[in-house]
Image 1: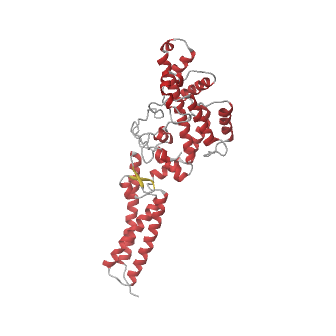
Image 2: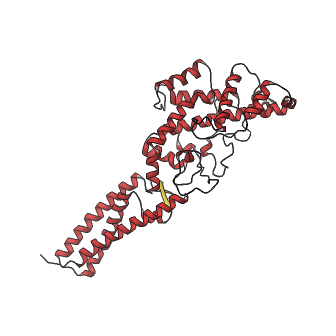
Image 3: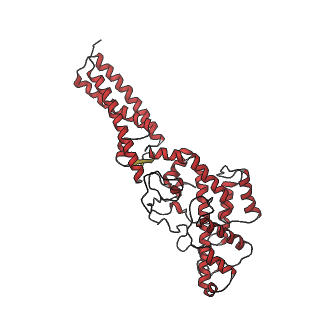
Length: 377
């Protein structure tokens, strides 16, 4: 999925973060702020890691779970509205829906922890969807509210990703369920098949590398068993989560916590620094061997300052003046404010160190070539 299809959602953490760097699950849960938010991680995976398909797959599977939850939530609501007496009866189906499926909140993290309440809810959700797929006829699409909105449903349409829907949407809201959007069972099936055909099957448009056993299990579950519940993708989702956490996330933290410029900007500073350095050296030796006075040699401050500053920025992956101004570059010449408190504190400390080194080297070079005795050849 192209980045242009997203709307950045940089939400504030519900409580202050302690003095530590964020974890990967906190980034995916949208509990962090720039420059270590989910949007910045997406840009990093796309432009530097060149493996954004893994993140897109993970986000699409999370969205599929949101879609399933919204479907069951609508089903639960339709049962309560149309047949409120079922809530007091011993109906096995209604009791299962009302008592075990809970609300519509979907954790964004991996599904490997079987002791969490969310994991148990997901298991119940998948079990219900399998049961519903094997012969149940009641669905929110056939309910009274769904019949009123049936004309608005298109087969295969998916709601926007919860990660990038709106700037101001609260983190706990079901942002995958726009107002007036009714989810049919066909939408869930279409969502599962789209994930299969986009990421899983050999030769797919955006095929992700997964163990053969996982690929085979997903293919058989969807194409032969007719399943579309979230548990179909659990192993693949966990595998991609661990791969990104191991291979991409440490580099992302290094790039965003200890630096604030992207590789194209670093290369530009390297070129500019080398040009300014050689120009300064050439001018310095010309002025020395022409025995020019010191007031004229003071012009050497300009090329040497540019050279040292640019080369130091390239070496340390950081523009210290931008960092002290609270800015971080996420794409070439596009900047965002550094809002994560602990990252901002570390960035200020590192920027001060880089600036001190830059000034020290620059002053040493300038003093050397200004005060060295001249000798006319």
